[in-house]
Length: 177
Picture 1 (cartoon, rainbow, N blue to C red):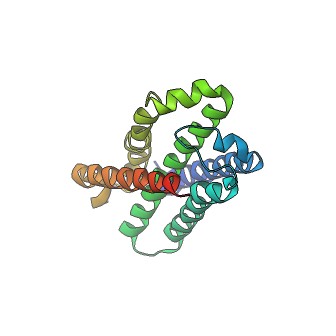
Picture 2: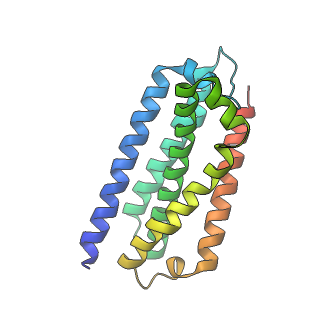
């Protein structure tokens, strides 16, 4: 495999993912009342735009900064960590946006599925599973000498820490009034 070609493919896939995330965020911004109807994500009705900024716009800005940093930084291992972080973070944002869409489409049924944890708890694992099953494998092919990508302990710790931070961020965001 040609390293440049593999890297271009995975970077292009990421660019498409960010485009999809931005489109979904735009749809949710156009209908803030859909956002407020999804339990357990209930937000005070007078503040849906502020809540949307906290839960969608700020994470997109962090995502863009991390991805651009991954392209600008010279140190290869740091670049790999930033690209991995960006993928994991984007997948986490996608899961959150999916919950809003499920709640909006299915109404009270979707809200109760999320509230009961039937969708929420398994979804916490989705970014880790996709990252470890697909993204990490692709990057390992492109960067075979990476200590970060070849260490199962570092990868497990990476996924655990990012999952904890994501859960805490969104829990505190939705807890704010």
